[in-house]
Image (cartoon, rainbow, N blue to C red):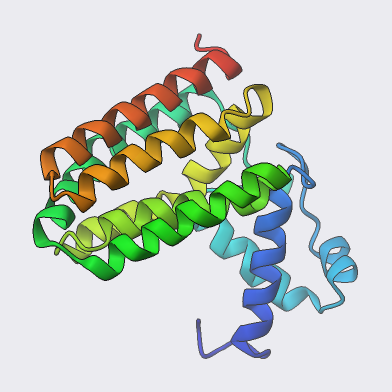
Length: 219
């Protein structure tokens, strides 16, 4: 965080996570205007950490800024979904393939733990937790690829991907299906089958995109 902040970075991080959670749980609706004063009062902070949090969320794709309306929650459409998932389809399977080839047991353990926790979250229908565990699972598999720039590019997509996932889940809460697909990807990774893990992941990403486009309408 910038050294110019008048409040501790931890305060901004707390506000950031609260707003992110609100967006990913649909408590803050798509297109809803995000008024700094209202959010500050609701969260019990000054406007400064809210302003900084909104800037960060704008960079990650959850918030958009308009010269006339200010900040608002990003609205997912077919164009955005295709753009984000097109990049994921190109980069993520290759990153996972490389990560499996490099054999990082600790990363596979992290992915396995995320999968285990996701099973409980599915039972509780905890959408916010599932969104976070989903990104944790995917990142655990690709972050060992050995290319920091590739990891950074995929990390930059994680909030947009999470928001798009929420749209798909609203119409079709296919959490159990995705959990099963994740389990298959992890099994291939544990066996050292780099190409198999990459292929399963590519199919998983593509299948979910198809369901999202069906849900929001692909014009």
